[in-house]
Image 1 (cartoon, rainbow, N blue to C red):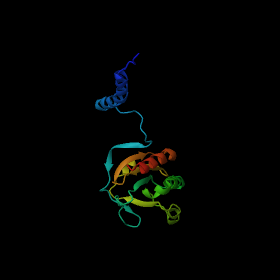
Image 2: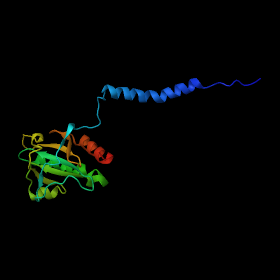
Image 3: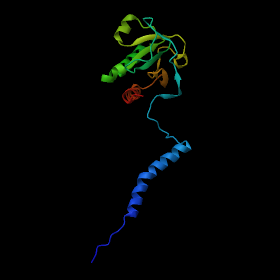
Image 4: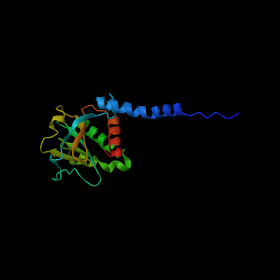
Length: 186
């Protein structure tokens, strides 16, 4: 008796359908404008990103903050409300520690305090945190109006404001967002 040869056309079609169907579904969903409800970021995404590259932020030493540098540095703006006291300084210190948890990538982020005049001893304790004035008032609408509070904004290495965290933000999700941005190189 001779063995019967079967053509595996059905199996080939099923496998082809399994591999092609997800691509077709993704294309159809994208063409219809559908986007997933959940996002991976915890902060409030600024859409479209606000370009701050022409804005002048004058550092305490008189130099203007430079956006582009070889190490592709992100800027974490600590936006202090009026009368930065103990609670405000504690939140700024938390941002400094969040930056340090990036380990070898810590140099790819800098913390700049806007709107607070910190005394020399406090600033020395918060090293490498820098202070700056917003000469063009580009971030004035993000600063808290209540005393002793801090809001946060992330600016990418090109000078685009991309994420913000209002007063009362949680430091753990902020750290996750920062780590993701730095490691993925966005």
